[in-house]
Length: 199
Image 1 (cartoon, rainbow, N blue to C red):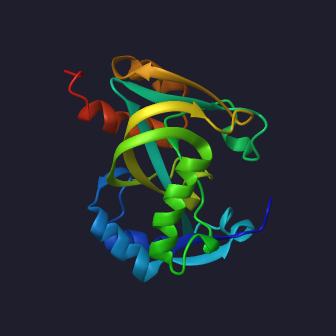
Image 2: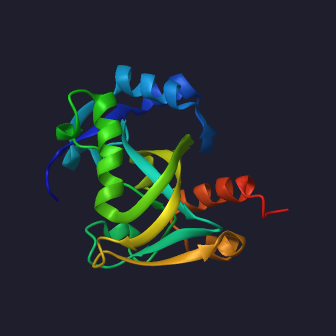
Image 3: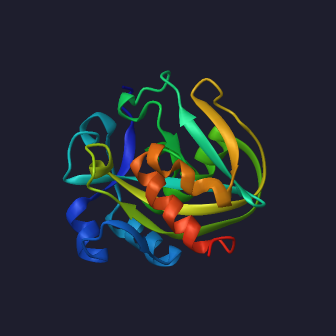
């Protein structure tokens, strides 16, 4: 694994500021960015991946194109073996130290970089919904998700060797819950609650 410096926060700071929540927590973007500004710092990824005293902040962007949502499947070419062959609803990744002058700027610029690296999409809106926290697996316990909904015109996946993809109708999304990775299940339930097509 490439040892880069990535954006993290102390787990105790997350729970002190937002409460010890499990799943999704609605948070304002301004409140979250203040948190990142005051508590974010950079750490070697090789250390952070297996140390539950910190959480790596990961932007997690769900792409909506009309009444369809982007669903991807990680291939075995990806380095994170623990997530192979699971469906994912969000795109995103680690925020690097070189993304910005400080943690807040790095997050915002890293968010944009991650979207541009992973997909070719013409976004009309990008809305922050809140945070995802899960203690269900060793992967999720060392990460904190920042959930966004990006609406616009989806063209294609850029990293075609790392992902298979399809656009799925929102009304069919529930059928995929059983084969999704943990964060995607959480994000899907948030999305289904927001969707006007759901009763």
